[in-house]
Length: 143
Image (cartoon, rainbow, N blue to C red; front, side):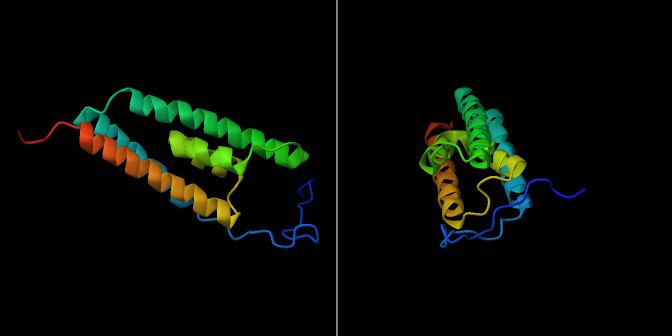
């Protein structure tokens, strides 16, 4: 059955310089999520990571997932959108796992190259901050 909604052209005269590219493979998102979940679980059980850290990631991920879903609906309706800066901040504060799931589920924010670069940058910063926190708060092993 053909898709009942025609897709907008990638570039239009009103938007000639759209920053679109082929989406990254979905496997990259899922592998990243699995590796992060395993690492977070390991840090919680093996290093005594505070309970609120996984809880923060879970809560922020739910908020980010919802924000991406709301933004996708708004994009389809050509209504007021959630700013990219807001979506990036949600990822930076720990919602990036939910944002990754939302990107795949809603097929949203997967093609705009500049957003993807900024998003993955926030993921990297968040993971580095978490690693620094874990290394500073984890008990010294072998003592």
